[in-house]
Amino acid sequence: MRLFLLALTAISAFAASPQFTLPDTSGTRHTQQEWRDKKAVVVFYIMTDCPLSNGYVPEMNRIAADYKRHGVAVYAAHADPFVTDAAVRKHAEEFGYTFPVLLDSKLALARAAGAATVPEVALFSPTGELQYLGRIDNRMEDITRRRNAATEFELRAALDAVLAGRPPAVTRTRAVGCSINLQGVK
Image (cartoon, rainbow, N blue to C red; front, side, top):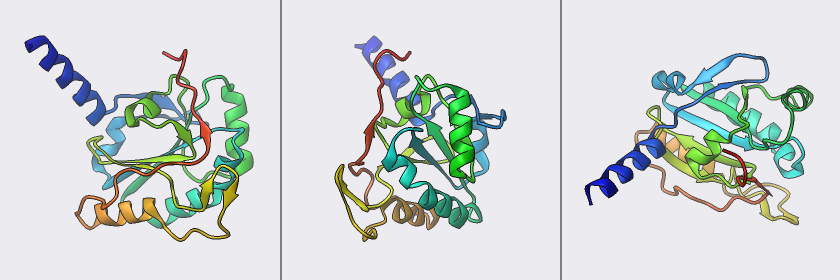
């Protein structure tokens, strides 16, 4: 029983505080230590070849711009370990990401949050506690149907709650998009 409790504690500690050192597309190394002085941390999970993810880049950039001044750190974590770093760099430049795109070939941040789809987003506390995981908004109804404009803005609502000192009212939603292949990646 004691061994089980120790294992459960270790799993909970990892889930509550992702440990990573990852380069971004410009070569700058990032760690979870950067999060300590932030009010919240947003990680968008992306892929170079997912049209739904690519279609959300303008909204991701708007969210980064809107919340940066409030002490929110924003990153994208590339979630396809089979795409070269050079291809991710080219993609980040072509699509004009305005925040760091992390090269995460081991999918450390996707695993830490339990992300399985792109575009999916995780909202972490400065200590690494997962506060929200799911869709950015409801623009995509399903893989083949989209609204002209979103009517629900789950990420923004979660961020606004956290910045106001409250837990998000919704902590999990179903993201629609391309699957993250977690098989065979260690």
